[in-house]
Length: 199
Image 1: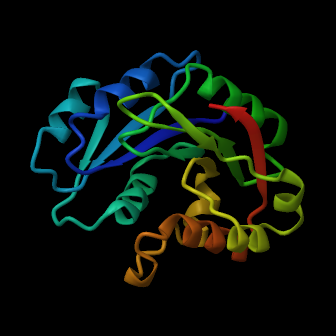
Image 2: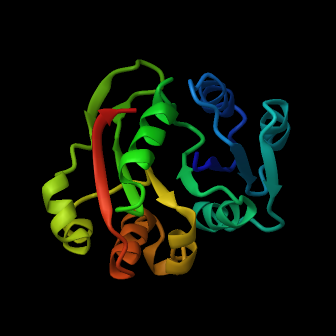
Image 3: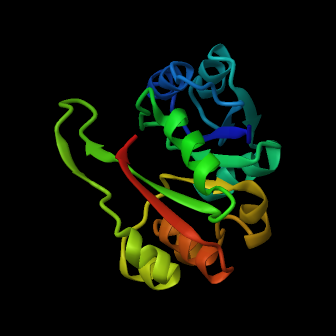
């Protein structure tokens, strides 16, 4: 079975890591590797991650989320990568649905965009979800990435991710790095798919 890594860039995330790492441990199919990039946090981010038995990659200079994700992609040897923000959560069937998709479609596509809900951390109020259009995404991933907001909630074939150059570290795309990242992958010729189930 192809391997899947959970990669979490983190800065001062000790408050949030127990939620995401706890949900990662509850997956019906375990992640093959869980990695946390500690971007020079001033709190106990690294210690919390280590307590959950995540592999901690420590930065020496604070360089931001995009740099951290690229470091994590280089630090794992898993076939597929899932990057996840430290303050987000996963449903228990995330890995099951991803592995089923990889089995059925992993030879055809290099990128899987996943559906999710925007939820207020304190009140649990749901504000919306991704709702991508699979037909448009299949037809022209670059056009779709230019015209739609795509956040970094997907699964990526590691080999293709590395060949495409990963996340763009240019400061000009700071705070818009997710869209720049998906446009880069589309320009490189990677094929995109979408799974509408909330994960």
